[in-house]
Length: 82
Image 1: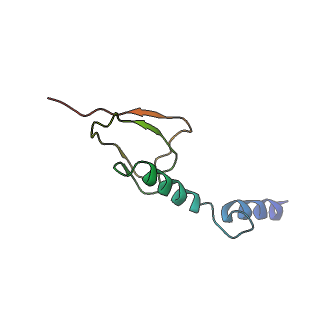
Image 2: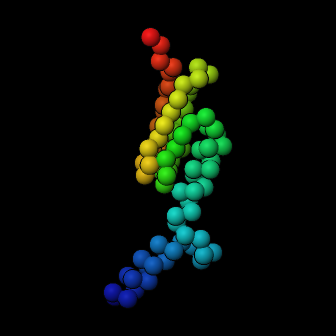
């Protein structure tokens, strides 16, 4: 039983039979984020895809490292004015 559970855990950690690890999904999600929102910053190993509305005001958005973004997150950014 322990050996079977260990095999399942190893299969989960190493990903599908193609040899790709689960960690590569972080990289793919970051690339997708950077392509969709090139002027915003996402930290190392952060994942998820927020929907950002910036109204072309030149606002900024910085997402920290190791952040998990829920499947539906809306971010309405505004440029600060004094």
